[in-house]
Amino acid sequence: MSADPIERKAPPQTRADWTIDQGWAGYTAAEHQVWITLYERQTKLLPGRACDPFLKGLDALDLHRAGIPVFARINEGLKRLTGWTVVAVPGLVPDAVFFDHLANRRFPAGQFIRRADQLDYLQEPDVFHDVFGHVPMLTDPAFADYMQAYGEGGLRALGLGQLHNLARLYWYTVEFGLLQTPAGLRIYGAGIVSSHAESIFALDDPSPNRLGFDLARVMRTPYRIDDFQQVYFVVPSLQALVDATLSDFGGLYAWLEDARDLPIDAVLPTDRLITPGAQAYARNGGRAGA
Ligand code: PHE
Ligand code: FE
Image (cartoon, rainbow, N blue to C red; front, side):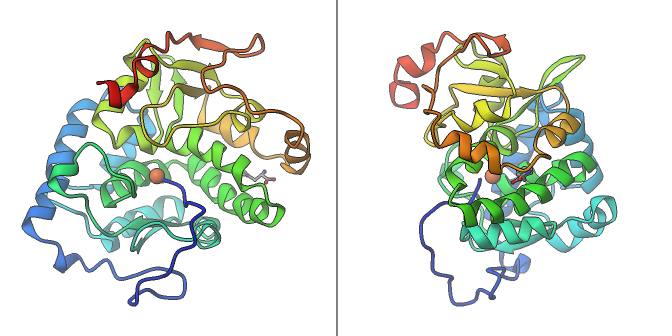
């Protein structure tokens, strides 16, 4: 996921840019087994759900079934395809550090893996979320450009005190974005593809609203970090996402100062409604009510 606003202190072995060695030889057999379990579960589920660029990226990088991948090996292929690399970090890093990595086509990935009793839910992004979820999309040229632009825009937003607005864009695209294709809706968001339950919910459940992507609309929409989303935004293509975010956000940020946040489950007359949500899941208490 994105960096959070909490002030963080780097663990002792961390370099100035917050990267660490992946320390691949230090993973235990049990940790590799967690990767294998998650990997097999998701690769069975995702054909016909994840978008083609994701599935192609997964193949191209050979994020193997044998266990937690070696970042240096991923980077051989990834660097050749789009100039991106993956670097290991201990966990969430400060915003400025995170954006600086993205602006330089480096994706900071959590080095650690979740415990076997946390397969479905954890707070901090681990190596499965970061590498399985995020890295395949970085093989797509349009998405690769988008992520770099996001890093540059993040540094700018930080200077302008506008990160709260930009973070919503990351959330509703990079983490929870859906893509319209001739074959139907597909997932490209890393928060969805790395979650077994949300990979089903985001596409099939009648609860959430699915709305056409609109930049200003997204920036007025709060999000949930504790449960399935109540709204997903759908882009017509990855290139359309790049195009929609090319302009300088300065004017938009100024306009947002006076525009109120929308209720998370709102449907506006101006929204392009893809599927209306009944919101039954959230109204029944979501994860807590399950
Ligand atoms: N165009 C944005 C700006 O002016 C930068 C950006 C691009 C941000 C793509 C996010 C995604 O800040
Ligand atoms: Fe993420």
